[in-house]
Image (cartoon, rainbow, N blue to C red; front, top):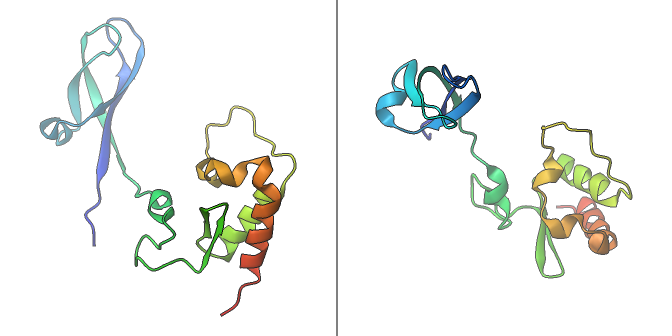
Length: 147
């Protein structure tokens, strides 16, 4: 099993310029403490800031772009090509999501919501209107695939 990797940030308001900063800390000596001295990226003043850590999630999206399972390295079951480019889904739920997203004539974005959905990570060729009909046909064919 892989060791969990963490990303560290020092966050706070500068004591001199009072502007908010959020600086990634990569120095191994600094991340072993609860707080550290950080230079303000705006004015250069040195601040005592609390360190915040979060686990770095492994991104399977990039690992599956080659049509292989990121854990076992096996070729994905739901796999085909459109105009020479791979189209894949990791499971039936993902396949159903792709069909509903790609077949939608109007894709409504929620206003200024910073949350990214699965559609943000889809390759452009899967989202383009010129490929919509062919994409839906291929995805539907994959949906009916058995054994």
